[in-house]
Image 1: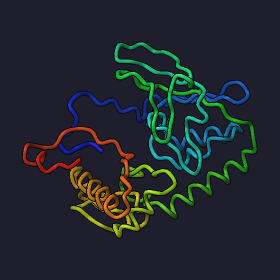
Image 2: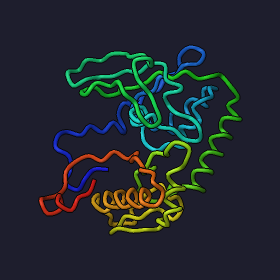
Image 3: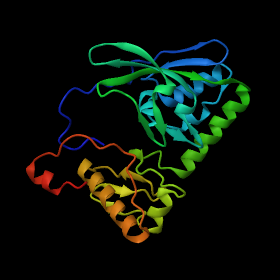
Image 4: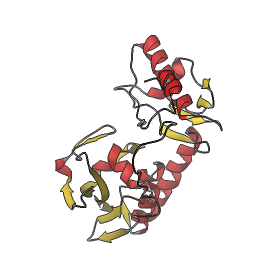
Length: 244
């Protein structure tokens, strides 16, 4: 979520670039960080490799998935990563082994401050491509039925706390459909905050703060945002209103 004042500095968008994929050996795939996660899933299936079908249900690119250990339907990207290729701002490209990173639920530690992912080598299993395609169709149907895929959002807003689900806690707090400005807790899935058409970043950030406060008040559980919030408020007046 980029605040309304924007971000000081240069933003590099890898979408449409860093889009190469290659199979090598019996069970390995290399994909660059600009490739859409869903495209990685399809590529693997087309080459008779299974184990990456869950990526079809994850929006965004492989680079973002690597940065957050993205997951869906019981799968997580770092479970199939063998090694990653990175670059720093001085242009140094290097390969780093999976063991160099501390990977947890929606978190990855070990990337240097000025380093970013260029791509990853994935370890998969030869398998039944027909069954894998059917699995992808099933996962996409489940996602469409349970998530607001046709409305702009940042994806899942909060991490699931241990032993529970953020969506259940938010719904139990009576917040499904709650709005601030153009931002709304999705009536379809309570762990999604959607843009109903004219939401500002401030609307969304304030709604995140309100949801956290209400869930904490009613359940004693403090939800941790999965959404990363960056950038600056528009000006001093809005900055004073900004929450969190």
